Image (cartoon, helix red, strand yellow):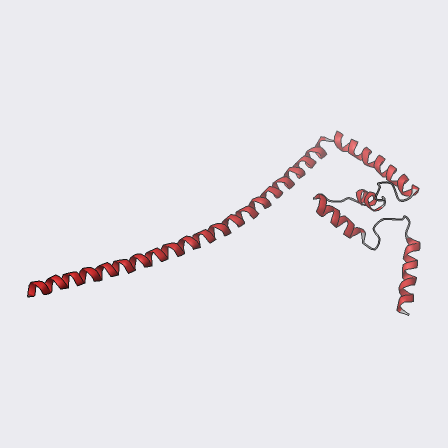
Length: 162
């Protein structure tokens, strides 16, 4: 019974699908997230449509998808032309890019600094242990020398007594 219900749901979902896509059972959100992680940039809806409706060879899944992609690319080109003419948008984009670059550099510096601090702590602990060991060796040596001097003095004192 359960399998039949699932099959009915799958058939219903497949009938609602407007265009054949390449994601299989993977959700569009998962595809977008994977692309964002690999490229380091936010995936927009137009880009996601393009990613999910192309075959491995780069051709559109269907002619309708190809037509939509062409229209989307035309609209995108139109938008980019308007954005390029508007210097404030270009400045904002440049600023956002610079901010992102600075954030990335700060994250790298922070990771590097944390690593350096950890390394310095290890080195400091090793140096402290070595200093402690040498201090104890010197104390032992001084005690031996003091004992030897005391024995020598006692010997000389006893000789003088005789």
